[in-house]
Image (tube, rainbow, N blue to C red; front, side):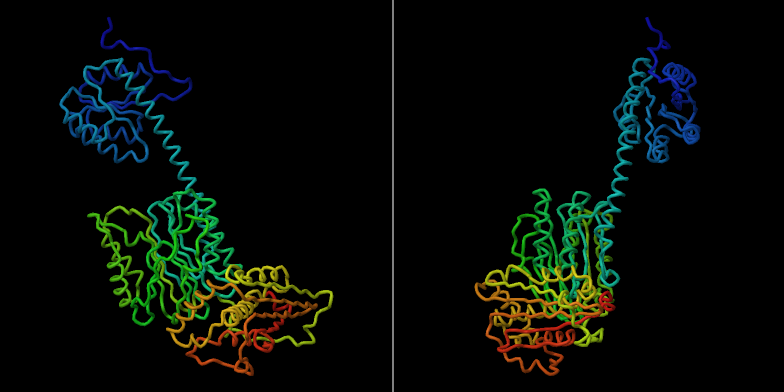
Length: 590
């Protein structure tokens, strides 16, 4: 028959492995001697303490692998000592086994509450002790594995965050002017803010919200940002860019994930914006003088990624703005932020903060203060994102060839003549429904970009082609009267009627012809655009025409005259020819 000091076979110990340390805290000498003997039989080096203070000192200096602690130690009892150990241990987790003869449920429950892992009742059973030591070793191995996995996850997240910042955020433009508040609910945000400039100088901006939050949501930002910047750089229109992102995400993302988007394109004239809201809260246009909400742009489309075909063209809206106006974009994480009582922040509090922020001159700062005061210590349920875009020159690209910022130096005709073998001619024609389905300008620009000597003038050529094509489409094929745009109300009516006629278009055609002559030091490009319309009286647009400052029509033709060597309308006014000249020294300057 076994006595109390008889022990089973010791725990398996690998040769050369340092002995584990066990720390005993008990004011009873007999208990310590018995437990010390049993632990040594199982391969442990044993440290002893008579009270809680001594135990804490040995814990800090010796770093034991397991602790056996009596509940009723003097100076500091087992409950307080366990609490202090859990505060000191940091990321490690040392098993604590309480030594007790107590059997009441309240005392045992409190042992677990203060950080204990198990109990060992007096008198000690060698078999039960070995079983508990094996259990703690297994739990220790699991803890180490979890810790290693956690560290690996943190390393992966750090690498992914670096990739995310470099591939998605780093290429944003105008961020010194665009104010933003981005608060992810996790390390990674499902919200994304993207900005870039188009060849014509537009600022294109997306505030988007992927389903959920965290790394899984943020992964969609990589293909979305790639398509957004590539298509904007090639001059595609907002609805075409959204269609490109939608098709990409639909082919990549799981069925349950989608991408709600606020898309804004601000014209370099700072006179108009194009907006498309796809499943997001209202985009707010704030008056530049008094900060009041002048217009709300509600969602008019499904979020991206749900279905491969979405009509973004009918969902977009164009609006006249004034320099100094501001646009406020927000994800639903703002209005749906909750306080400790579960109450939502809501649209009313957001708009009240906007009014207060306008008075103090810091709209975004006031929203942040109000949001913080409302939420208090409540956990953040969703990503919170805000962007405030001022319609001021600072958001526009700083390139010398913008109208009004450069003086056109015209290359003499005889110098711009190229050799016949260097001439290049190509043409493109669109008819009927193709006119509403295809934007030919990016196609032509990409073709021209292949010519090295034209790359530096890419933005100028994009502007020239766009003005000529839009003039042929709007006033030639669609027969719109530009006089409609001579008031703010007429401006909105013009684009409403344009969308209506474009969607109903069945007939009509536009042809674009490009002739390039390249010499050793210079060259010229002749662009001819002809439409199937009836033409118009071109005499007012010849010989130094200049529109009135408060009119919004006729400025495109003035722009052509300022950028080109010559602009000629051919009778009956449905054909226009523009000649642009360049020199090789200036080709890389824009």
